[in-house]
Image 1 (cartoon, rainbow, N blue to C red):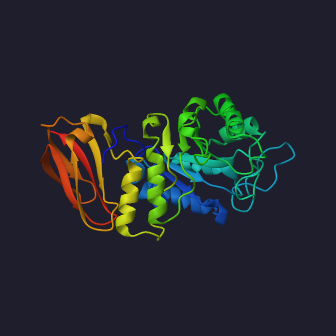
Image 2 (image 1 turned 120 degrees about the vertical axis):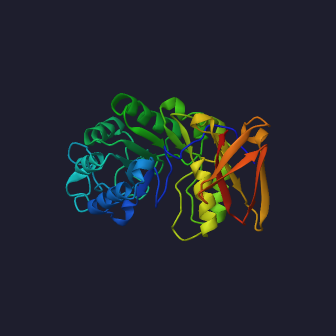
Length: 324
């Protein structure tokens, strides 16, 4: 059951459409500046920002189809009439960070705006001048050029002009980026193809991501794609499992600060099951006595030697264990 490694993305890079440290906004449906401001306000007003949900990210389609006469990317005049810098200023004033999207190709995946291939330094300078804090770098329309070449070009530009920008490498796990993305300055790397809002897609991406657990750690994280929580394709129990597993970035048991442990008991079967995590599985001494905090039930109890629970089909239990 357990995977022993560092706790991953809960307060660093959870991807969630409803609530997450990185909240992606689908610009492909012509998201407006006003909607992005509302999203920013919601993170603050709901208290999520205080819990570590810091990034508001714009996805594809935020720019005009063509660059300007100097070769610069141009924000969409209809949806971002005051530009990206004005939005970044607004987000920063709320104590949050702004993310943006580009692609290691001639166009982005939507083909509605230019990619950054062969414009890497120019685009990173632009992003930095706007105050962008995060770059998702996708992998469409590659002009027949290799992944390593294209991402190395952006890596070099980021090291030169974007040292303060989080570099999210999104090449879909094709060439096992967990093995090389950190070395080119990546702060996260997609380990899978795009997720869909259903149980099979979610669990398969969890398994694909688990292969690379040992490569994750401070400064560089595996990314199994965004959370689908709340989009309607799974049950409440399945979404609870989805959120819990992604919170651990597929590290099903891992260390927290203060000698605490995070543990998820995940029932992937279609029937009720009792699941047990022994202390030897989660890195605790066999004789240790702990206080177990059930994060979904908001209750606490004592445990020694192991932790067992009856878990509903496709559901999970998630605990924080604090040694007494």
